[in-house]
Amino acid sequence: MKRFVLLGLIAVFAFSGCAWFQTEEEKTAQELINDGMEQYNDKDYKDAIESFEKLKDWYPFSQYAILAELKIGDAHYHLEEYEDAIAAYEDFENLHPRNEAIPYVIYQTGLCYFERIDTIDRDQNTAQKALETFERLRKQFPKDPYSIKAEQNIKNCQKSLAGHDFYVGLFYYKSKHYKAALQRFKNVLTNYPDVGVHQKALQYIMQCEEKIKETVVK
Image (cartoon, rainbow, N blue to C red; front, side):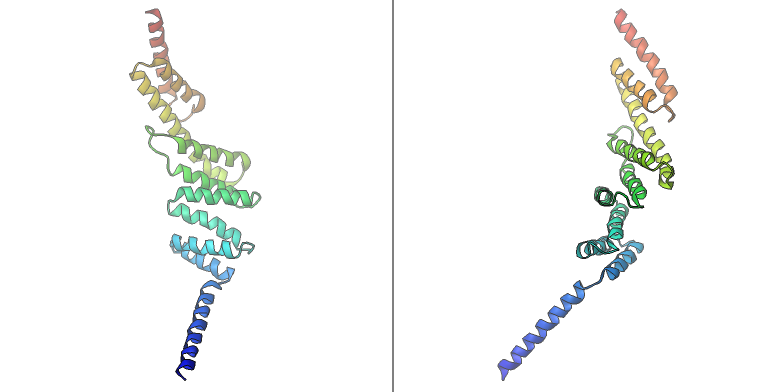
């Protein structure tokens, strides 16, 4: 008798366990997108990513999968996880190159670089990548609102890059490496003529040329 009772209890627990796992994993795509968007709107970005990832993995052909892919990038962006955001946005662009959200995706990719631009005395790799991304947006979608929105960011990127070249040029000038300094100041004129450093660069170009002539005469 005890044996039958024990077997019955095992069966109940086994059935309950299965039911619990089914409840946890049988959320529909609609439920997952609702969960994810609610979490996203509440700024609970980590949980939102988890919900969107589940939707993408369990229902890759769902009508909501594309939205989930996009919001994964947005959630990482808000968490300042910029490398993860870039990866998500680039995946989206590669998978859906004709999607209407592509201008937004390119703009957001540019922002991920833009947000990490450092001071002019530091490496400007992120400024260069941000500039290239925003310029690509402007070239591919010249009339899109996000291209127009990117214009100020493009100017800020150019200003940062010009400031860096001028800073390095000034360092070379003070170190009496006039040819290297001259090249940097010329870069400012050639690549970034309208960002507020133009006149100063011209002045130093003339001074560098004078110093180089003096060196040759000697």
